[in-house]
Image (tube, rainbow, N blue to C red; front, side, top):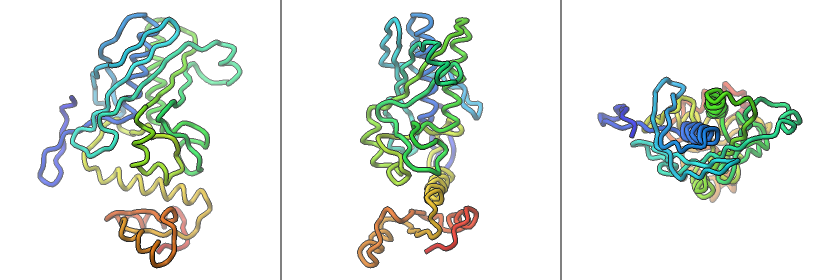
Length: 266
């Protein structure tokens, strides 16, 4: 358990760690086990904000040519729908001729079951790629490379990140609105979940606006929440998927619409 706290509305709330941190830890543990042939019961990772975590490794399956293991997500006191899910990593050897064909570095990272795929422009991941954001992707690659260096392994490794419960959980997130299909996103710029983070909500609104802009939309419709969307649908005949929810962050949303170059906003 992460013993890190913040205060929100005069309440002491425990922080957690992101899906990105879980994916990094699982990949690092799996890489060490593949290269050593020995079980790793816990793994140490350092988040981008410098917090050191030692996390228990679960569901270990060691084979000669691949290793699968998982890290359980802990969101602390944040009401996160991904809290408690297992993030898995499978690490396998890659033939060098395949690496030369795809012209990449020594670590390949992709998404498996429960990790979404990007279908729309405007996100930090390209269309067709797994929804593993740049910071977690960098964390995973560096962690696996560290394991390879520890065992003087100069070959290539492939990492598949999966979240079996992510298929159903994604339906409760913004992913369908963002054009991410089939699962959750692997997220986290700091590696740490801060409970009730207003910035996280503002960042989500910003990402959805980016997707709209990438689709060449010049006019944006914004509602605070479900009542506004119901009114648009029932009284104006405007589909819910044409709207962006802004919660209480109306001023921030107006500023972002101006910054991103939308011509008008309702």
